[in-house]
Structure formats: structure tokens, C-alpha cells
Image 1 (tube, rainbow, N blue to C red):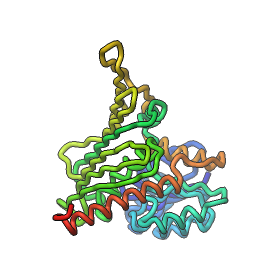
Image 2 (cartoon, rainbow, N blue to C red):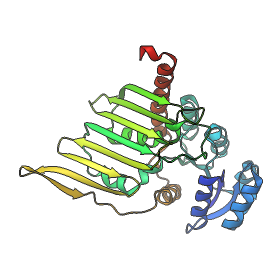
Image 3 (spheres, one colour):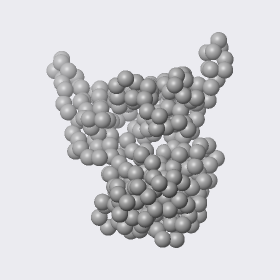
Image 4 (cartoon, rainbow, N blue to C red):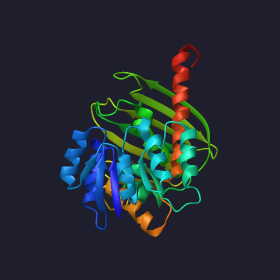
Length: 309
């Protein structure tokens, strides 16, 4: 399979390395507006480099797109219109209208359109899916040490959206209300945010995300009728607590560890080969985007009228 990577900054370079080492895949080239970066990654991956991604589209079956979020729609649309299979990093787009247009481009076609919500491919979440049944309360914490890597979006679109997509998948019920707060500390956009999300089936999720934490943390806790489940995304480990004979019994969540990004990219290639639907396609990613935008609107409302919040 002939494949190219568009956008080879820190994250895109990881994509390029993964595809260069993947059996049955030929990394035809990499593209980046920073030609020096493109050449450096191309040399490391033993492929070619271009500044304009359009120069690669006639030579490939599929592309992986890791450009800044404000270019997701433009680049993905150009590729999808050419019938090229697309892996697009999250978020799917900046607006729901853009997301809908991308989804419509592939509707009824054999083109695979997968969005990079990488936590869905974390072995711990894969194991969790077999255990979770109608969760009643979910608490997620995603705290990252500060880095100037991301400046074009706030912490909701950069980091929280990962947990939002996972939670939407696990709950499987429409959102009925959102209450959120966000604070700008070091950047023009929010660096720390908290959201309370209520669902039609009665489940409530409380999500906290920060990109200025002194120590990293990526954890999710779920409470359901028969169990409390605590999961560490980073360690890919978890514990299940259940009532048993008047005490609380504890057992590990059975996981088979692996690198989520490589699992995700390998599944993209396999979906193309088999003509299968991706685990996280455009419609799932659009729902996560819609919820993230609702959270950002509530943050903006509170910041504009703090005395009414």
C-alpha cells in the first residue's frame, strides 16, 4: 500500500516512522510547509520530501494528515475529493459544518476516513469496553506538563476531546446538558478546563484537563451498578472493585499492552485492505467535536458574564 504523511512535526514524524516500519506499506513521501523539517524526517524514514502535499496525491493510495488543526478541513477535503483514503488527526475540523462536509464526501464510497482519537486504541480502553455496562458516573483527569508544542487550540480541543470521545462511546446516550469552566494561564486560549456532562440515560461525567500541570496524569474512573473501575491510560493498567461477601474485592483489568498510535495506524491500513469501517470514523469524531464546541461555548459564556455563572 502506497502511503504518505502530510505534516511531519512532532506528531506527524511519529506517523512517518510507524508507517516506514509497517509491513506491506510503502512510505512514498512526506510533506511539510517547513521544507527543512520535511527533509529531515524523509531522510530518517528513507523516503522523499515535498513542501506541497498535492504533489503526492497521484502517487498514493492513502495519506495520514497531522497538520495544525486549522488546516484539517482544507487538507482532508483535498485528499478525499481525489478518492484517497484519509487518516486525520483529531479534531476532525474546526466547525460541525466542516465536519459534516467531510463526512458527506465519503458517504456511499469505499474511501476509508478515520480520525485520530488515539485513546480508543489504548489496550486499557479496549479491555474496559468488555467490562463497562451502563455507567452511572464517570470521572476523567488528563493533566499534562506544559509545552509550547500546541498554540493554535486550547486545552479542550487539544486534550479534553480525547476523553470526550471515549466517554461518548462508553455511555452511548445523547448529551442533555453541559456546564463548563476554563481558565487562560499561559496562552491566549484556555489552559485548564473542567466540564460536567449529563446524558439522557442519567449518567454524569466530570472531566478535568490541564496542560500546565507539574506532573502528568491520564486516568478515568467509572462507577456502575456492580463495580467501580479505575483505569490509568499511561500505564495501560486498571483495577475493578466489586462487593463480595461483605467486603470489597479487587481484581486487575485484563490488558495486553501495546503502543496505541501504532495499533491505530495499523488498523487504518487494515480497514483499507478489508474495506471495513474504522473504529473512529467521521460520525463518531463529529459527535466529540460537537460536545467540545458546546463546552467551549459555555466557557465563553461564563467568561463574558461571570456574575451570572
